[in-house]
Structures are given as C-alpha cells and as structure tokens.
Amino acid sequence: MDLVDDTDAQDNLPDSIKKARKARFAYKEADDIKLLQEVLSDDGLFVKGTKEAQQWRGIHLRLCGGGMDVSEHSFKRRLKTIHESFRATDRESQAASGVDETVDEKAVLLQEYHELLREQKLEEDEKKTRQDAEEKQDNGGRALRDAALTTFERQKAEENHEKPSKFDINDYLRETLQARISEREDKADTKRQRLELDNRMITLQESMIQWQKEATQMQHEMLRMMAALIEISQK
Image 1 (cartoon, rainbow, N blue to C red):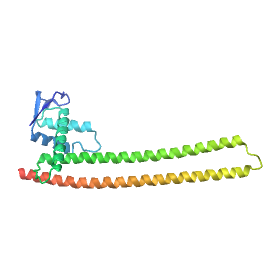
Image 2: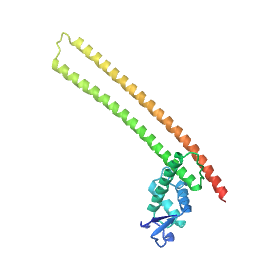
Image 3: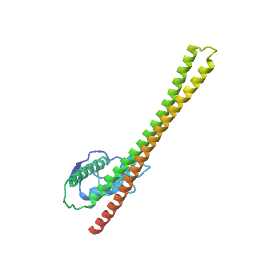
Image 4: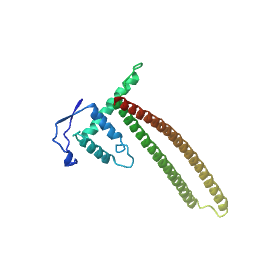
C-alpha cells in the first residue's frame, strides 16, 4: 500500500459522506482498481461533451461515498502516479526479452486508460492539423489578393506617372491587360498546386489517424475481454 498526504479541503462533499479527516490515506490495490474503474466508466473522464472538472467532481463524490475519504486532488495525483509507474514498468518489460509476466486487473485497467489517453491525443492532433491547414489556406488566399492589389496599384501609379501619348495608348493598354492576365493565371496555378498538396497531406494524415484509431479500438476490446476473464477467474 502507498501512504498519501491529503490536506485539501472537502467542502464540496455532502454532509452525509463527510467523515473525520485523516492526516494520511493508505492506497491499497483495491483502491487503485476502484479509482481506475470510475475513471473508465460511462460517467468517467472520457465522456464527450462534458467538462473535465465536472467529471472529476462526480468521480470524487462516488469514491468518497464508497469509503475513500480523500480529496479530489489526491485522486488526481494518485492516478498520475500509478499511470507513470505503469509506463515505466511497461518500458522495462518491453526492453526485456523472454520474460513471462502475469497480467492482473489493475494492469489491464491501466493499459486501457493509457490507450484512451493516446486516442484522445490523436483526436486533438487531428483537429489541430485541420485547423492549421485551414488557416494556411486562408492566409494563402489573403496573400494572393494582397499581391494582386499591390501589383494593380503599382501599375496604376506607373500609368499615371508615365502618361503615354495618344498615339500608342491602345498598344500600352493591350500589353498591360495581357501582363495582368498572365500574372493572375500564374498565381492561380500556384495556389491550386499548393491547395492540392495540402489536401493530399490532410488525407494521408487522416488515413493514418483512422488506422491508429481502429488498432486502438481492437486493443480496447482485447483488454476488456482479458479484464472479464480475470474477474471471472477471481470469483
């Protein structure tokens, strides 16, 4: 068991589950499993559309109601501690070869928690990639418009400054118009190629993220089955 200092206030707890404060709380294996089960439950941390602070308040109340009289901060700190310990142990097991390890319920739950964190990070990266691509396209469009306007204003100023004679005004206007059309076509082609490249990159990243999601979902199913088998075997 691990002893954890817990000095945070519990003003948010109902009077029915408030108890005398203890200076230290000893986390046992069963307490860690309860914490992980609550975090991974349908009312846990990975519920879309709800705020994390609200989710933690619910987890805190349910665990305190079940006899774990510690603060919300203590639960967060304990979850971080056992996850970091799991990651370190996992790296050591991967580095070793030919070693058979016993997978218990806590390890299975920690693995599922780790994979959900990883999937959440992938979704955030995908969202950021889309936002960056859209911002890049918007900036590129603005740059092209600004460049076209600058060119037009410069040419207009040159026209006013040079004041071509009445004799060659038609030739001058024709050449100017052709130059503008050619310049705009070149810029449009450059923009089109850039957008095509950005879209290809986005499509490739989306395909990779989708593949990783599917692999993660398969791993979740395997972990749930293992957890169920372990629970049945322990009864």
